[in-house]
Amino acid sequence: MKRGLWIVPVVLCLSLPPAVRAADTVRMERMNWPDIKKAIASGCTTAVVGVGSIEQHGPHLPTMTDARISDALAELVARKLGRALQARTIETGLSDHHLAFAGTISLTPETLRLILRDYTASLVRHGFKRILFIPMHGGNFETVRRFAAEARKAHPGIDVTAFLDLPGLTAFLSGLSAEYGVSKTEAGDHAGENETSMMMALESGLVASERFAPGYCGPFGEAEMRLLLEKGMPAISSDGVLGDPRKASPEKGRIYLERLADFIVASVGGTSGRR
Ligand SMILES: [Zn+2]
Image (tube, rainbow, N blue to C red; front, side, top):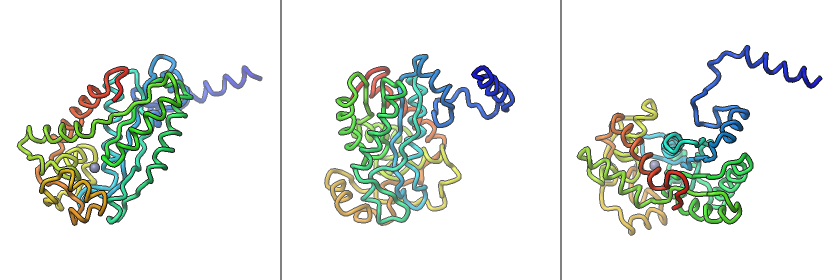
């Protein structure tokens, strides 16, 4: 009887069209469990997880912008690190300050913490030794930072880590845009040239270029950040844009994503870095 059970799946397997297999993917949601198990057993013991947001990104970008960018970066980082797989991106984050705009979905810090906790427990159970979270939305960084510290205590011997250099990220992105003659305020902190370029590279069909218009392009320091968090985005920008998307291009977006992934890999360390 046992022998019979073994034969049937083999036959079924051979009869499946090869197109349903995605042999070169690092995305676990596109792989089956035997292949994931084999990959982990052969040394792919790092799991990379993007942490995004579903929030307004001006009149020209979709609400999934941060989710999509963190997803793309997590895949690039997993590939660049090597011996790593990507777990399904956590798409929704902390976005209370964007709730004045339709479509924004916001979690409480506790909800996000519990999602991170449950992701980590699942990944540890499968044998991952290093779990690397990559938040790509400013509002998530503090919750991810606190969680990573808590999780390292809860899972001794497991390197629960995260890319946490938000000031470095902001400076790196505006530096990239500056190479193309785009000012820091145009590159923007939200839906400006920088994010718009990356979304043109990833989801050109969802970018409404006919609506490109400058948003808030004044100084954005601690006072503005406090105002944003306390009163919400409309207190600073009525259309939800910090920056100016008009110089965005998909060519630049592809370069930004590649170089940003390199920056993240260097920042977290190739094998056991911890920030
Ligand atoms: Zn964003």
